[in-house]
Image 1 (cartoon, rainbow, N blue to C red):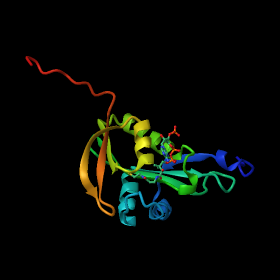
Image 2 (cartoon, rainbow, N blue to C red):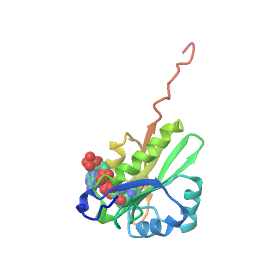
Image 3 (cartoon, protein in one colour):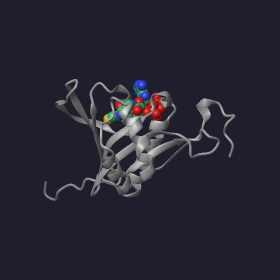
Amino acid sequence: MTVTSLPESTIPVAIRKAAPEDVPSILAIERATNAAAHWTAEQYQGRVQAGYCWVAELALAGELGGEICGFLCAHVVADEWEIENIAVVETRRHRSIGGKLMEALIGEWKQCAGAVLLLEVRESNVAARALYAKYGLREVSRRPRYYDHPPEDAVLYRREGSDRTVVPLAGV
Ligand SMILES: CC(C)(COP(=O)(O)OP(=O)(O)OC[C@H]1O[C@@H](n2cnc3c(N)ncnc32)[C@H](O)[C@@H]1OP(=O)(O)O)[C@@H](O)C(=O)NCCC(=O)NCCS
């Protein structure tokens, strides 16, 4: 598929699981993104090897296989999934790339019958909070002054798996 003649806003984006060789690109995006959590290459390699890291790849050079323009990492313990880090290259934002990364994660979370999806985010991070709300996460609590530089509350978001049913206790 040749895509070089497409306008910038319609360049295709593919979401796929990250491979070990994507970690330098992930780190470069993270380092350029103040609002992202900051990790070492080894920490990213761990998430990639666990299979809970996705990347968004643009088709810049005529074929898919071009620039990595976003990533999402999650940590999974039993049926509890935590979104730990998501970032899109600043010049590529507002083109549904963050949303597509969320859809890839949520698709797999549902497929695995995940019970809970959760995360924490700075109170002032309007874009990320709107993104999470759009994908069904709801604010459940706060941790006062959880973050430093600058000090700020963390807002905790949570979504329950749709197959979870509450069974009333007998005799209550
Ligand atoms: C949050 C982030 C990943 C969104 O990526 P994106 O590709 O621009 O997001 P999308 O274009 O897919 O937008 C999806 C939704 O997010 C919300 N959103 C995204 N940017 C927004 C902004 N600047 N203001 C308000 N809402 C915004 C909207 O609800 C949007 O849906 P809509 O287009 O139907 O209105 C991106 O802004 C980013 O990388 N921010 C810095 C890193 C960060 O804050 N990570 C979170 C740390 S917890």
